[in-house]
Image (cartoon, rainbow, N blue to C red):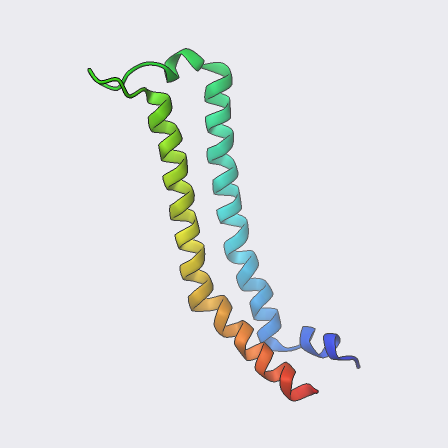
Length: 102
């Protein structure tokens, strides 16, 4: 059996692939949904985006755009936290065991 096959059969590698799928898909779907929602609002209700918020000069479009940016930052923070707690320890364990296979 070659080296990559031995790594793929490690329980840590199986756990790593499952952990990555567990976090990547939901976060990706959330980001795509938010972006598509903004694009649909721009496409079908463009006039509503130019409406000011309250008596000020800031429009709803600016607030939504800022909301998307902040949402992306939050999603990135969630991923980094998860990666540091779950993915990185598994990666280190795999690297340590793979080093012993040589």
